[in-house]
Amino acid sequence: EVQLVESGGGLVQPGGSLRLSCAASGFTVSSNTMSWVRQAPGKGLEWVSLIYSGGTTHYADSVKGRFTISRDNSKNTLYLQMNSLRAEDTAVYYCARGGVHIVGVTAIPFFDYWGQGALVTVSS
Amino acid sequence: IQMTQSPSSLSASVGDRVTITCRASQSISIYLNWYLQKPGEAPKLLIYAASSLQSGVPSRFSGSGSETDFTLTISGLQPEDFATYYCQQSHSTPTWTFGQGTKVEIK
Image (cartoon, rainbow over all chains, first blue to last red; front, side):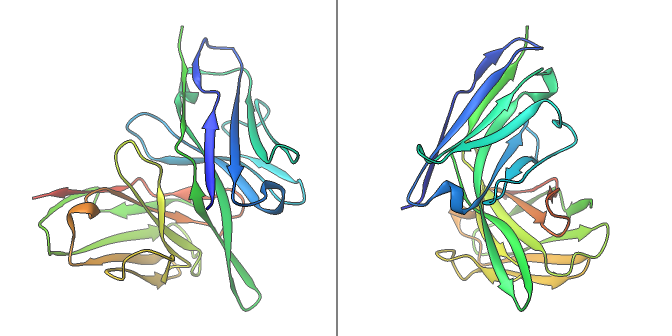
């Protein structure tokens, strides 16, 4: 059974740092595209970052230069290092596995499994 | 790519047929996915590639559309379907974007 369990959330002051972890079971993190998606209180969903199986990473403009996605293959765990945190980074952060649907030569990505989320609150 | 859902909320009764629309600001072919989210829970994939039903999702859910206009239909609303629904485009990899959500409430 595929499971994703986030940890590491909490209260941090503006300008501070926090590292989120996402422990996976039932599949291999390094063989899949993995993403972080966040949801501010009462708001919609925002894609934050992803890491491809090959190791290439991408970030939303809103976090570029401040957040770093990584993984530990030996622990089958995904991470999100968040630095220079701002009030607008306050959100529930979800890790999500990327699936893909092949149509001819086209690959259509989607998020097929999600963790339960970790709340990050940035406030003084 | 901007994704716009309508309506933002709706009230319906158990057994009703419900339709939610999602419009993309530019053509995205069928790179469109639908998710359901209940309060305090993570999103759950319902439909991928515009019309393909995710394994385990009841057949009362269906999706259609292509290019810029998409629809999620629930045929026979059940009590467990009252939730918020999001569309998501995966055309502009990797900067995927979501619609603002449609909240389905009990009438």
